[in-house]
Image (tube, helix red, strand yellow):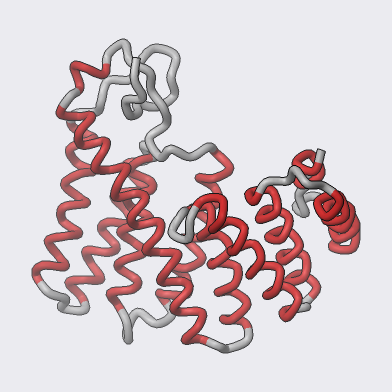
Length: 250
């Protein structure tokens, strides 16, 4: 029952007050329930935190997001992409309060979580390419391992961090390049080669412009090579699927 309440999103409700009313009802339901999961409680506190942010109540928003991170960590782990959203919104609060060191630390953590997740997906995809013949007739899943809403959230989070990083590119170009590479990997796994190449080339150009190490430039070239290889030799897509994917088993 409480899960049903929590899927009433703040987006589209029209007014923050109305959203708060719905979420207050959900919170009351959660408090009375003994069956709500950690994931459900995380979702509740995240939405309550976002409503508080919209109202400008940063202190209360911070408390809700801290609870979001706690419950998400219990459900998925501290380094999971499902937990990273809480870190991101908390970073936004600190950024708005001009607590830039705290915000920077959290933005970096979010970036590292997504980098590891997408790198692991790319590694698995490389193995799938090697074993392509074994893929035929197997069960597939989407390349990112995310549904459309999660992909949209990933894009929103990472492009927001990129905007912040680009404002300080002269002082910390590596941080901007890091996020550009993550976005390139994300779009690569979403089978949007043009977007993937766009972000990878931006990273490469910035690395050359800032005269970063050959090692850094080579790491970006590796991403570009990966994208080019996919364009040249795409993995076979099974009939009826919208994307190629990774082996899940027969």
